[in-house]
Length: 572
Image (cartoon, rainbow, N blue to C red; front, side):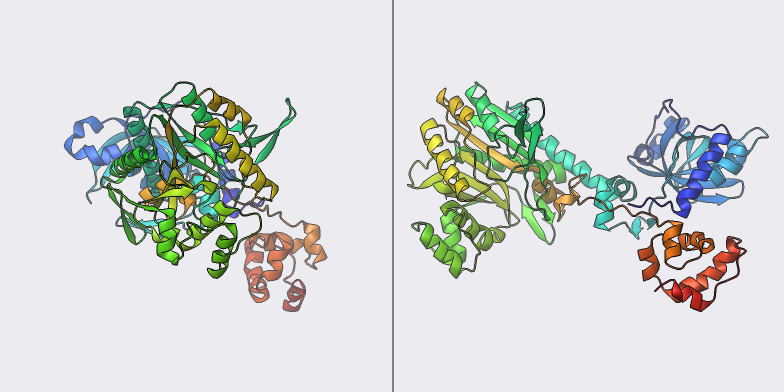
């Protein structure tokens, strides 16, 4: 971020002042009525021309061609772009031609919001266009948009810099139409899930984001402070324990799109703030949950892409049921050759050492198995696969397996080498649950900062009785990545987390003078874009010397031209 205005920004502010002097409000308050869109006109004009004799449309001016007394410009609204044609005499039917000659030609800029009234016609080249009879400035743009060239439907010089795109998403959405299309698909994903769950009779609910105990997952929380109560609070890492309280309360099926927060690393599949869908269903188990999950993802793929097979990078992933099912122990044996099912913590550490997997003393049995699976197995599961029957140490909220000692009834759905969903037959035995929490507390004492806290109120709720229940958590952002063929989670989040932007402060005249630059030449260097001493020192001295001569004349500097040796001294 720079506090220094570019030449374009200075010119736009000057245009803003001139518009005000002409009596034109650059940011009018009154509503502008719209009765058409770019997409509507392109799709329907040819077969229904009579309905487009008197249209009103608004959007950004994205390009312009001025040809004397007639001009074309491209208007972009939320649905796309359309060409607008206007003439001086139709826009200004009286002798006062200021609106065309001064306002449109000189004071409007690319990026300005305008309203247009007129009728639709087809040009001699066959382009559907709007013949404007009225033009209204709706909002003046003071910063220039990046220039993106387009020809024959193909984009050239697209804005691709991730730092710019993610930090200034509002500009990314303007200049990259495919980005808006991606987020439209993200909305379809969520809508399809809601429609599926609502049809099943589920109830959408809201649970607290600020929690006194961060429960429901193994993750490091964000901590804040409530001033009025003078207590620490945590941003939720999961909403599981609250949704189970609602099952205790008598609801049979509840769901929530939960904004969760985990104080962990960031990469292409992790953002500290993310969305998870969790739903809980009474009188069901994890076997039923696998079936309903297959149905759900099949419906989402169809609603988003029109088919169950979706392209993800160079792979085609098919969400049509049924999905492969394999136990975590069998998966580890298949991809490492080690049978870890009977190993204790010491044995698992030996396996990790042999597989060159780094571990530390805080890791218990569950964490060690998780590390082995994550390092050696996870990436192999490209097509949807249920990894089932986890060891009890990995799953403190899960019911013990009905027939396999030491395991729990849990699955994770792996897709494209990453976990997409996590589900259980939920533990509803309050005595067993307390013991599991106490085991987690021991891990916390060993230094595991992702171990779970003991939630005594949740235990109290279980003591009132919770029916047999199955629950699932689905990573919505990761699902959106798959459905929209995006390689990074940042591309399905409007505003992903980023490091604070550095503010570049312009050097003062005194700063330049301390570098040996006479004050008279400071504006010239700033005109070149050398607005800080750091930029000056990294510039090419020969180019600066050559540019000084041309800018001296352009800026009408009366001081004599410095010698090349004098200029070279500025760079020492």
